[in-house]
Image 1 (spheres, one colour):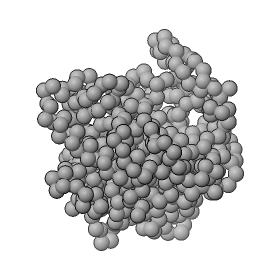
Image 2: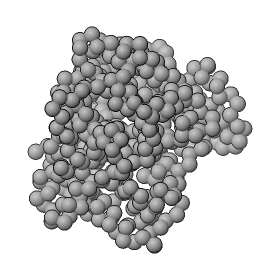
Image 3: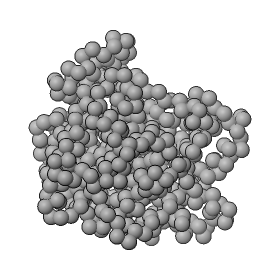
Length: 508
């Protein structure tokens, strides 16, 4: 049965409640004695949909991801819950749109009262660990939103992104530099943790969030050499990104930038292969669920072969379509590709369903993909809603957490506006809902049509037939006005639900 938050249902007319239920999740099925798989969630940083060999990239070498696509479940219409990093990570952790917890943009933290997938997996008897990029608050011990506070038994993590020879905090301690290629470092740490969990007889839930391929780019010579012969046409464009030397913005030829970016992606791909190989040699691979995705679309400096409209930061397909792969040999024994819409918010309800845990009793925005894994889902039961708020917080809004508790400690190559190499976070109370709170770029994706509202300045409403027009070139709203009106009604009701959550109503 569909789960609808009681408070919201009581406040809405019956017809609107039924309509809104299509944007809320199906409850996890009650499994009497589920087989508990090991679970590993992998996420690339700024890794766009087309930047894999299996999606047809003409130059990139991703043999491991390609092999996963050949042997597992390929999610051809997979979306990041947000158009940038912190927002999408919040959707993975909570199964909820990031605005519900006030995680509006990169550098906005989550809230301590959110219920995370790590907490739910730990309650189900899993050993839990996080490795790599966190970006939902500081990772130091004092932070109420560090990985440990949000459900992880152990963590080796960074407040933000990282390059070669990265600095990490281990379980909230002072930052320490670890020499090496960053993706291989965190995979090696994850492998050690999995071996420890195996010896204790506990299943593991491990989250590995890579720092690659986020700019500024650094790569090993052996990986750079693979891309020495990129087309000279890529050198016709100058792009802006961070200088590894100064930490400030610089301008470079795109061909040189792509060479470094592609090398980072290949190194990340290789590290995933190291993990898969280890799972194989230890006998764990058959019953380990690996789920890989990106956290948003391709950033501006790397847009060269993207087949979709726009880029990172946009709610058009180029900003939110990302690679999606699930591998679980014990349950997905034959390779499949699906064009069913799926999103990072689906991770929490899917995993709860698989391990027999009830869903949190608050509004969620994802649904369980267990039927998709089992081969019985042919289309999505609810549309996916997106919203990029301009962050016009109310005048005088109070910080949700003491600013001292929001200070980061792990350095990164890119300097902040104040010249520091660390990043702080923010989040604010939002006690009432005002008419201006509904503004911002937003979209709703159904099984065929996508409605975009204010996607670009003065764009108004746009309706796209994504099955016929995945590049969003033709606005068909003039010929399908009723479809647009229906989707907009669902979207507006969903926004009301999100804003209710933002006020803290779910925590009462």
